[in-house]
Every structure is written in structure tokens, then in C-alpha cells.
Length: 296
Ligand code: COA
Ligand code: MG
Image (cartoon, rainbow, N blue to C red; front, top):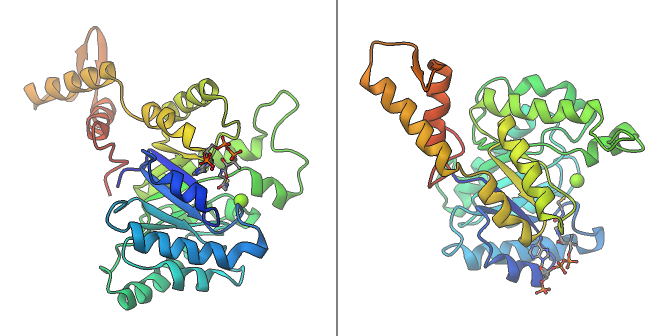
């Protein structure tokens, strides 16, 4: 599943749903949670369900829904409405640990059967750092978790949960807790063999800033990023695709090892290259074109 860019679309907005249809985002996340006012939850749920039913063919494997949290009293009704053919995945907010993902998976088992969908076809992307217990339980993502396809993180809800005035220091850099959340997201994704999806870039008019931030994020190991505005999507897609120079270099590494299968370490342009470089090169080549987030 391609997950370079995941565009949030508030599901109660017909205009935004329409606009999203033309977006080159790898995935759309129809939001039922924080972008929707309490008074509009039911409209949003119904609109998401009919959008999926109508667009099942045109947007195949690209439609996610962010349901309300498992303990909100709304999650089961959200799921009952949106698990219909055409749904590719659920984004689970306020996830407290991998056991929440497993519990959601059991619900999906039943709902897929009811909808005549392939068992296990609905994938899950948790927002894994939005609560204090979630941070303490990140080790629960130390190995493969059924249905998981990616993991993302957020700094806004966590700071609200902690009671912090801001998630940034006075100089604008992320405070340590949120840097930790960012790093734990990378480790959890690697440990589960899924894609780390970076959190949103709020200033949606600043594409140069977004591009610079995505370059840092990709260097760190993120495979994709949340978008909150359609104008961010192309920048994100480009940032999370390997450049021509990277592809050529990766191909040289793979070819060099293929030419000398009994050699564990070799030199390219006077620089030592060994197993981790080969792993990275293979991943880069796997990323090209389809931008497959990871081997799953
Ligand atoms: N998805 C689809 N379409 C969107 C969109 C989105 N996330 N954000 C904006 N658009 C559409 C607008 O409807 C508008 O189209 P229109 O002229 O046909 O109405 C066009 O893109 C330009 O929008 P713009 O005027 O630049 O932005 P805005 O002021 O209308 O909206 C936000 C700004 C931040 C409110 C909006 O981008 C948004 O709702 N983002 C998603 C928020 C969200 O889901 N948050 C939860 C996750 S953190
Ligand atoms: Mg939130």
C-alpha cells in the first residue's frame, strides 16, 4: 500500500469531499474525529459511508476513515457505518497501546464478514502518541501487529493530555516529550515492519517550509506524511519519493553486491559499503515508482 501522503478530509464537508476526489494523495482520511464538531458527528459518519460506497471503484485502496476513539462511545457506530466495500483502512486516534489495534481488528473481522469483504482487507494506522498511557506503552509495538500498515504520531493531543501550555520550547523547537514521540513512532514502525507516517505541518500556506521539514523527516526514516490541505500533497509526494541521484546510487550498490556475491563489504567511490547500505539501497529501489512503504 502506497502511503507517502495521507490527506485529512473533514467528512461533514461536501465541498472538501468533492475537492478530495481530484487529489493525488496516496490515501484520503475521511475524518469523523477532531475536525468534526460534536453536533455534526452523525452527518459526518453518514457522509463518509456514502462517499466510500460511491467512490469504491475510483478510489480503490485509498480510502481511510479516522473514527472516533475506542472509548468515545461513538467508535462502534462509526465502524458499523463505514466498513463497506471500498474501505481500505481505519485510522485509530488516541490509541493507548497495540492491544487497542488488536481489539479494533476483532471488530473489523466481524464487520468485514457482514459486508462480504475479504477477511483482513481493512488495514489500520494508529495515531500512537496522543495520550500519556500511549507513550508509556509504546513497547507494545515491538513486533508485528495484525492489519497494521503504518503508524503515525501527534503532538497536539498529547500536550493537551499532559496539560502543557505548548509542545514547543521558547525557541520554537519541539519539547523533549514530543521529540521522543516522533522517535518512538519511527522505532514502532520499524519494529512492526510498517511505514512511519510523520505528523501534520500546520502552516498549510508555507510549501517551502513543508518541503524542508519533509526532507528532514525522510532522512530520519519517515516514509510519508499527513496532509491537512490539498495544496500540501504534491510537495509531500515529491519529498517522500527517491530522487534520480538516490536511485542511481542505490542501483550501483545493488549491482556491486550482485557482481561479487561472496563479498560482505566493498568500496564505491572510495567509501566503504556493507550490509546496512545494501538494505537501504534495496529499500530505495523498492520505494521508486510504487513507493511501497515497506516490506509487509
Ligand atoms: N480536503 C479537501 N479539500 C480541502 C481541504 C481538505 N483537507 N482543505 C481545504 N480544501 C478545499 C476547500 O474547500 C477549498 O475548496 P472550495 O474553494 O471548492 O471550497 C479549497 O480547498 C481551498 O481551501 P482554502 O480556502 O485554502 O482553505 P480553507 O480555509 O477552506 O480550509 C482548513 C483550511 C485548515 C480548515 C482545511 O484545510 C481543513 O479542513 N483541513 C483539514 C483539517 C482536518 O481534517 N484536521 C484533522 C486532522 S489534524
Ligand atoms: Mg486530535
